[in-house]
Amino acid sequence: MRALVISGGGSKGAFAGGVAQYLMEELHHKYDLFLGTSTGSLLISHLALQKIEKIKEVYTSVNQHSIFSNCPFTIQKKHGVHTIGIDHWNVLKNFYKGRKTFGESRNLLKLIKRTLTVEEFEILKQGPKEIIATVSNLSLNQVEYKSINDYSYEEFCEWIWISCNYTPFMSLVRKNGCEYADGGLGNMVPIEEAIKRGAKEVDVIVLQTEVSHLNRLPSRNAFSLLTTMFEYMLDRIEHQNIRIGKYVAKHNDAIINFYYTPTVLTTNSLIFDKEKMTVWWESGYNFAKYKNTELNQIEPEKGEVL
Image 1 (tube, rainbow, N blue to C red):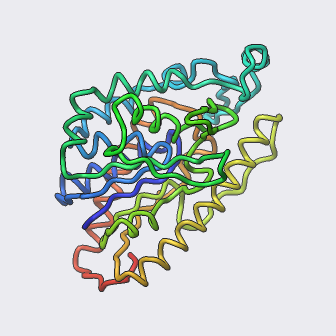
Image 2 (image 1 turned 90 degrees about the vertical axis):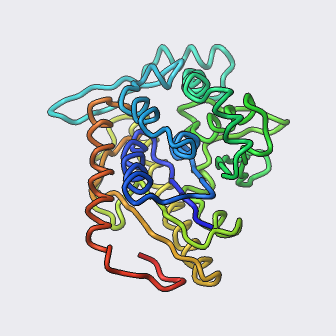
């Protein structure tokens, strides 16, 4: 069994889309299992459907309004660098309405439903491939994996949306008596889950550089500090997930093929810039092509990690 795992990473998901396009269209990799966290969960349904151009169009055309129904920050671009500030009015408006987060992302749920149709959902559910979204159950303090086989169309769309909700900037969802948030808060790279479900070869797209190349600038405001803190915590979670995944692969005779971003794409993955995301998609495609050209003579042994 072969699995495709895509990590969380917000707008950087465009890079993952490019990598997946090369793996599926040029290398003709056939996957039995698709697992995604956060932005990865947005990609996997369309990849399983082989509708790569459709999801590419989405990733290269979205903006802040496509995601946020109430955006909690302002974005300024100076000398080619994006900086964020607090949109005090929107934040106060959210609190006045009794919300528990700074912003709301209900436009993203609408986008998911417009993009993934009921007919496409039924094709996937009746097919042999399994599609799984990772979510964090804050009430029970655990990570949960939501398979398309277990839910209706409306429910699965909600789980994809929940997997992407980067709290406290996006919606906190109460479902089945529990509060749920971004799957990346618990498992950024669900390699272990793929192997537990029987995968013997796993292609893993990690939306982060393999070695840290980042020295962050001082925080400019409270939101900048919060995003920096969350990025730091998610980086630590990601490194831990990868170490666990390698350990599990070694003890289950599984092969892992890693695809990291070769450079730092952005320091704030909540900024959705159409031009940059278009470039990142092409960069992902070209990077996968380059990496496989370099490795095409190497036949890894079981348990080996490339």
